[in-house]
Amino acid sequence: MPENANNSAELKVRSEKRDGAVLIIPAGEIDLTSSPTLRVELKRVQADKPARLVIDLSAVPYMDSAGVATLVEAMQAARKSSTKLVLCGMQDKVRSIFEISRLDTVFTIVHDQNAAMGN
Amino acid sequence: MKPVHQSSSTSSTTPAASAPEGADRPEVRIQITSNPLYLSGTRELVAGVSRRLGFTEESCSQIALAVDEALANVIRHGYLKAPDKPIWISLYPTKEPGSSGPFGDSCQACSLRIVIEDEARQVDPSVIKSRDLDEIRPGGLGVHIIKSVMDHVEYVKRPAAGMRLTMIKHRSSSSADCAASGSGNGGACCAPANAKDRPHA
Image (cartoon, rainbow over all chains, first blue to last red):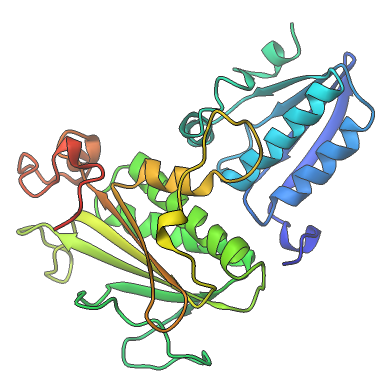
C-alpha cells in the first residue's frame, strides 16, 4: 500500500511556532490513507522536542482508528521528550471516537487554541 | 468503485462474493479494490444511504465509521496491504411497513444490515476480539470500535475463500432515529433501546 502524499491529497497539515510552542493544524479527513501525512509532520516537529505541542483538530471533520493511532504515537513520543501535548478544537464526530476508545481521558483535550496554548 | 449488478459476473479470478446464504437480495452492492484510496467514497456512500433510510446523523456517522474500520482491517490484516484485491459491500435495509418513497417503495428502515466480504486469508472468527483498552498503544482499536457502534457483529469464514463480516444497526425506538425518520408509529417497527448485541431475527 503506498503511504505517500499522492494518496493523501485531501489532508493538508500546517505547522507554526507560537509563543514557544509548536502548533499543528491538519485540515481534512484523517484515515488510513491520509494519516501518514500527519505522522510525518508530527515526527518532524517532535524531533526538536518542543516544550508544548498543540494539535488543532477544528478542521478535521472525520478521524478513524488510524488517525487515533497516529496521535497515540505522538503522545508516546511526547512523553519521552517531556513535551506537553494538547489537542484542541475537536468536532463531535472526532471526539466520539476518542470516547469510544476511552482515550478522551488519556489525552489533554481542551476547547480551543487559546486554552491549548495555556493562555 | 464498481457497482455490482446481481446478474453480472465480476472479473475476479475466483467466484465473486454472492449474497449470503438464505439472505435477501441486497439493495446496494458495490465492489472496490483493497486500495485505501476508496475508503472515503465508500463511507460517504454508506452514510448517505443510511441518512436516506431515516437514521440520525449520529447513527449515520457510526455506521460509516464501522464500515471504514472493517474495510481498513481487510486491507491491512486480510490482504496485507495489497491494493488490488476485491472487497464487496452489500447493504440490506429492513423496511418499515407503511412508509412510502417516491416510487412507492418503503424508504424508512427499521435496521440496516451491512455485509462485507473478501477473498483474503481466513482467520478463526473466535480470535477476532477487541483488545484491552487499558493498554495505551497505537493500533488494534478497529474491532472494538465496530462492536461499540453496531448492534450486532458477526465474522464467519466464507466457504470458498476469505471472510464475511455481517454488521447490523437498528433504529432504536428510544433514540432520535425514529423522530428523524418521522415514522410516527411510536417505534412499532424499531428495535427496543436495549437491542444492542441482540442477534437479529
